Length: 135
Image 1 (cartoon, rainbow, N blue to C red):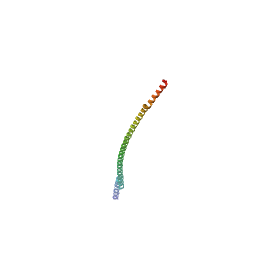
Image 2 (cartoon, rainbow, N blue to C red):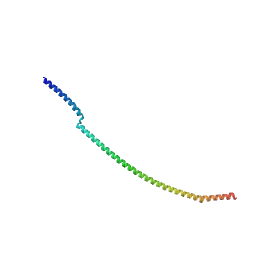
Image 3 (cartoon, rainbow, N blue to C red):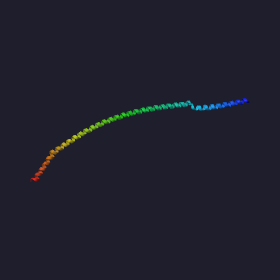
Image 4 (spheres, rainbow, N blue to C red):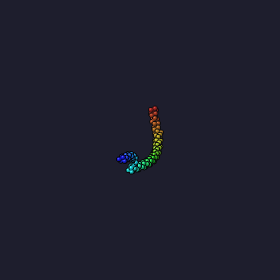
């Protein structure tokens, strides 16, 4: 009977060791990843790589788009500058034509004054003097 008691005690000790070992293994197994979780992690990493590649391509596209827009802006500024130069040339030509026309009008006014108005006034004053004073 004593031997049976010793065996039971040994079994109890073994059972206790097994339960401690089981608890230790349970805690350790929580830190190990399963195949499914590793596959999920690989898929997530792939999506991150894809997102990073997409962001890189998007950045490259933005850079190319900004370069194109800058070139278009420069071309438009050059065109507007040329148009401004042409308009300024047209305005200066119109200004010179207006000045020439104004000088011709002044010449005609001068001819009218010296050719018609002044002799007419001289004749009118002479007639007035002859009529009013001489008579």
